[in-house]
Image 1: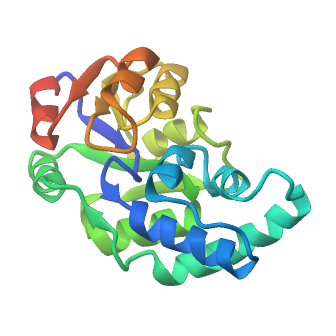
Image 2 (image 1 turned 90 degrees about the vertical axis):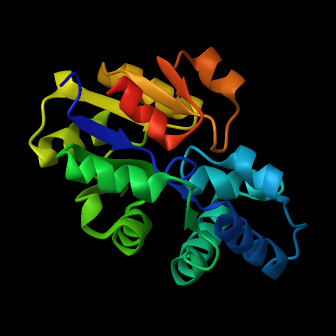
Length: 214
């Protein structure tokens, strides 16, 4: 077996979280009298954590201190509403069931805040993904490789048999910084061109194609 460990990004890779993220962003924007953002704008703002998401969503004139307040409000709203419209992408559940059946080690590494990552992983994937790591004070955000190394350690896996799966240039950079290959998925929040230009080792259009690489 070439690889026995697969580390997945969450948003745009396993789950389509865009609608719920957009709803929470716009709830906070409207509350403070700012113009709403479109789905496409929110999609473009994703990838570097919710702090960056809120910074980009509010007008540029807003101070960092104000953004910090809005971020707390966003997190509170999102925690209560993150399962309204969020769904696994087509074919993801079948893929995870097969990976589990064939005894692959599977984890999630995300720039979404840790509480939400763990809650969403438990709700949607149960025991299929035993390790889920999000942004926290203890672990640097992707593209730093820290969370990847932590996931490999928690799984008891070997980095030489680990591959990373994500939908963004940040994910490709994370894999490169960790010294592991990256599969770019084209069904997520970034284009095939972005993934190719970032240097993804593989590009796939459906979850089943992962098995042709493993």
